[in-house]
Image 1: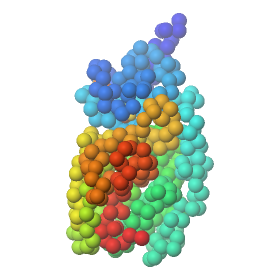
Image 2 (image 1 turned 60 degrees about the vertical axis):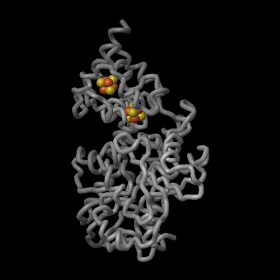
Image 3 (image 1 turned 90 degrees about the vertical axis):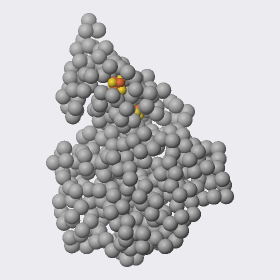
Image 4 (image 1 turned 180 degrees about the horizontal axis):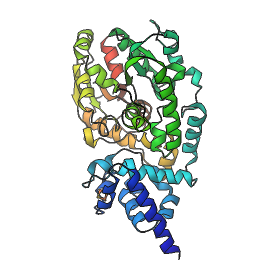
Length: 407
Ligand code: SF4
Ligand code: SF4
């Protein structure tokens, strides 16, 4: 009796998954070609890589699938979705839904559990005090307007994000962004303590309920103030507000900062007087590039910086390689190491070295546009042979330097 009952449960789950996912019907088109699993950076270590998940559900093996911890190796990078010839929503539907089931079953690595509990308790996965969210801006001259204190409408609401607000390795790029906005005379404000995590990564790690709670808290803050658009530092915040919040009837115009600044290239070019003589490779963040199709704006910004020679890595644009931080990966480093004994960020740094060259006399930079990346790539430069001189910088840090705003 175990076999047929398991089949029924799996079939019911699959039917629900198909119904609940936009374009979910396409899951029935899977021909088990395996292209998804071949493109998956951690497919080699998953007991059920994406095509195997579909096969397992068809074979009535939902329980086995949910009991298998290697599905936590999915970093929600969308590489599988990108290559699927049947255009099956593998990441948005299948892998995220399986993670939800794993969470419900209590099959969750302790480090991820810890981050999710912190997000629940403190509204951010770092477990930082909400009151300290705008501490990075203290003493800033001119003062950074916090909406509750400024008490006036602004043109742009800057959604700063968790890592840009709290992480010591990312705060320099947050300050660079603030200086650029001020130099461009942008009328902007931030939410400060009223901002909470955008929730995109907890959603991708299977915590859809927590995601909705965070989204609603942000919506409450958005509703209180007048502004024309939101800009975000973090591609995940951009993705959440653009693509996921509307499902909760929270709709605001939003752009990633690279789009916002690229629109102001004429102004920026006049202000970037200092030359940065460097060979620069750009890492396309998954949720800026592959998921939301923003490939050109970051490159336009980098090419506008005097002295910069932009080169491309082997994997770029829609075929970019994930940094390993998405889908909860930021909080699964120990688990990933235990399973794979390799970090994707190290592969990416190897690709960057191959693109920018090994000449230690020249300045070589890996440019990024997502706050998850500097800490991951900086760590990787310490372990990858030949990467010691590779500098990791957010695009806004390079722009600020060219504008003479650093420090
Ligand atoms: S690439 Fe698409 S069709 Fe091929 S096995 Fe994966 S999900 Fe199925
Ligand atoms: S989203 Fe990325 S990590 Fe997850 S299964 Fe697809 S290719 Fe693999």
